[in-house]
Image (cartoon, rainbow, N blue to C red; front, side):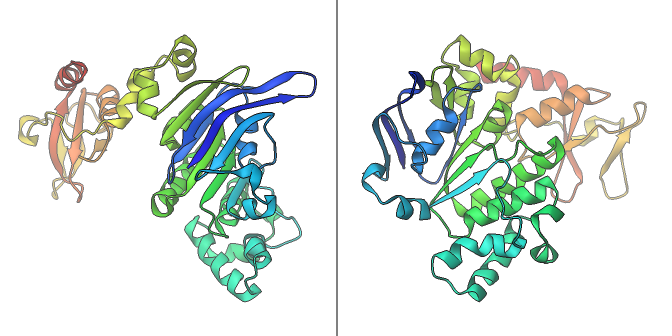
Length: 334
């Protein structure tokens, strides 16, 4: 657990970057620090590995004040990923990832073997190992940066705008890859982002900062969306927070009608949906494990206002009509 205990940071000249911050970042979870530019989120992040020292207050890791620890020892247990990946341009991808394990005493052979495994885990094929950073795309460089941060198997990872330098499609791919990794590894992660959608998608907890380094609200993404603490949080989270909050509710409880009740649904010989008799394209399908937001979007975009559910083999096993969905959403609010 990472604890900020009444932490204040005032820079020379009197500018307050962090104002009496008290919050606990839970072990094994990802906490997203989000807010407008200049709100103190990056300063807070950098205080965790002592790149910045607080003016007053304490930062603790598992109950121990980090000010009492040796800086080098502290940082060996903390991975650090920055926006531009920060790779060594004169080293291959493999040696970039192997750098920290070699410094910690592993043989170069051991470190490189482990590095290959890490590259695979972040979605890079073995042929990338011999390339140099300049030969990679922005998204590939970010994957290498994550692999390098994981190389020493640190219990804590700090990530400062790690995905902001790549285009939206690549960012989505990186998000999916990172969520898969975190599910497997269970690291304690503090991630800084200016993007509330990214914070809500990736964070187990979200800390929203306002100007002046004040913590406006701390909670789960669903709590922020459904119960914003004040007008600032509500505006920052966005007017469509009600729709986005559906991402955290399962579609399993939806009233699903039998496929036979929709004769206009066209199926192939295997029972897979292919379209509608008088409306053309199907418009997408959902599974029982999907969220209410997915089903709502499908019903809205469907040419007939109906979302089709499929089983694991892709066969249609039910339909949700838009009015049934609306009734369910109204019941959910009661």
